[in-house]
Length: 415
Image 1 (cartoon, helix red, strand yellow):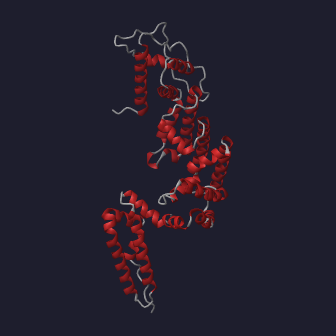
Image 2 (cartoon, rainbow, N blue to C red):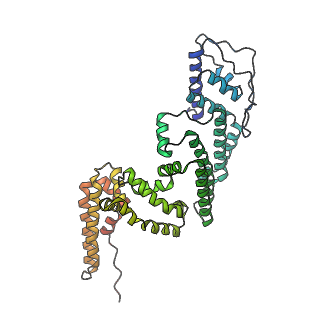
Image 3 (cartoon, rainbow, N blue to C red):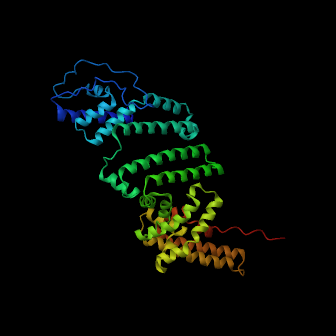
């Protein structure tokens, strides 16, 4: 039978701890059993169901050096005392944090049982329990937050990061001190929780008041973040992971911008987003107004990029180009295939418009020529894309081909 993940992790960490203690301190026994768990317990934590019995002396250590009672004695100690003693024993910080997370998790067993029972009580056929009942999602988020808070209270911020983790953080936040990053994470968690509750309660039907609440939370979140950072730090963070940068990065997926170009385009777009707010909080009318404001920036974009790069910007940020580029990347085709697709599409569509505008053609003749153009498009694209990619293209972004192959039926002639 497959063990639950948390049991397996607990077992592995316990074994690792015992191995470490035995390897480094086999000649002496660490007695963690003399205290109870009353000190520094989170007010929201649930105590263990029972206190393990104490003994006047530690159990004998077997001949192989491993003591089966070590984990039991470790977990009967007050958490703050346990942390102090494990630190004194020289446990690596990552292993210490993993152990403390398990010990903290035990203190929330009763609350976790309430959450599990609430999930089980929801009919499975109604969908995800967290989405069906917003209260369950709130319980889960609060439980996770309280556990993390207690771990932080015992160990402080998790600044023992690997080089990989630090590299990821620098990409997201810039060169911001670790204590500020932890504070930013807390702000992010708080506001995300409130925003998720609004979205969950909306049940997929976002009303004007829901969008107003989300926009208000976004403004308040930005204000709280701004209090934690200098203006330069705030700019660098938003440049890397803010909503404006995320959207811009998606639009520039095929443009291959330099860092200087990205910074310039970000500053321009930021002026619009500061006016309207994140796109996901806008109504249809507001999005239209925002798109119009972005279009007014194009002369400034051209002036910043220069004629040649601006022409490339215009081409590669077009929706048809992005669709073709995504297809090429998905099927690992040569990069040149994207421009070949767009060249063929423009050629076929221009000729199709000429056919549609030729009033000398009968409806039947017009449809026949459009079908022929659709067949030509398929013939020209097949050696570039291959059968599988072409099929995916027709289903995804190549609807223009299908429209040529199946032109609309002309209306019946008037009697």
